[in-house]
Image (tube, rainbow, N blue to C red):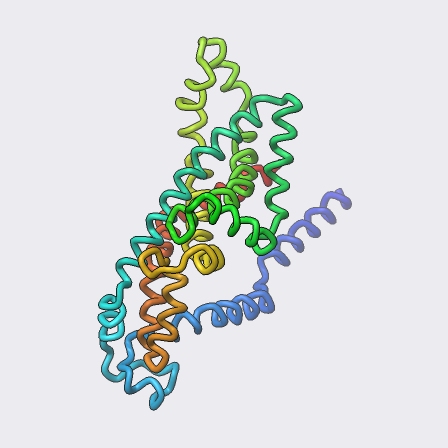
Amino acid sequence: MMSTATADRRTTARISSSRSPNVLGGLAGTFWLLVTLVPIYYVVVTSLRPREDYYSSNPLSLPLEPTLGAYRRVLENDFILYFVNSAVVAIATVGVVLVVSLLASYVIVRNRGAVSKFAHRLFLLGIAIPIQATIIPVYYLIVQLGLYDSLLALILPGVAFAIPISVLIFTNFLRDIPNELYEAMTLDGASHWQMFKVLVLPLSKPAIVTVGIYDALQVWNGFLFPLVLTQSSEVRTLPLSLWSYQGEFSVDVPAVLAAVVLSCVPLLAAYILGRRQLISGLTAGFSK
């Protein structure tokens, strides 16, 4: 009886201790939240500030006369063209990556042969290769293929560097699907394509959203490939255009920051819409 009572008191003490407020953690979280929010606040507020008030007013104060003039100046300087170029590159890259990576992951998970294991290791090896180390071979390859200064020159390397991490996410997710479901469909006479279409594709929705958002983010913010593999303004993407805006609007900081805000809107909307699936896909397989 004594030991049971002691154990109950210890359990109660642990529960009480776990329910006590974590002051240090709360302060650290609040500090980190401010570190994250202050730059975002500065960018948004400055983009709404008149050009002539930028140097004379407090950088963190609200503008006395907020205006959308900076956004209007950016939209009048080919921002739509750069936005469309980035959207084409991102959509094409993500589309190819999703199809290739999901099919390859299905084969790796369902076929345990030596070739599949070697292919899986080869895909994972790609994660360890930095983009900067391959930029010169990629440049010569794109030039030899006659694709320099085109959107395709940005799509192909983007696909190649996105596939390894995408295969890793998909394989971890597909391994969580119970093998009994595959066996039941096999007994019903389903082919591999039918199992992929009826079983794998619907259940992989969180992983598809995760890979789509992650790869789109990488391609949308990509700067090195557009800088090295393109030259003309007709194929310029948003990250490179922000760099050029920095020179074009060298005394117009509100316009530069307005371009930053506009370029962030699509990815922010995609993250808000797919946040739940994104977290579910990233944590797939961690419970094993």
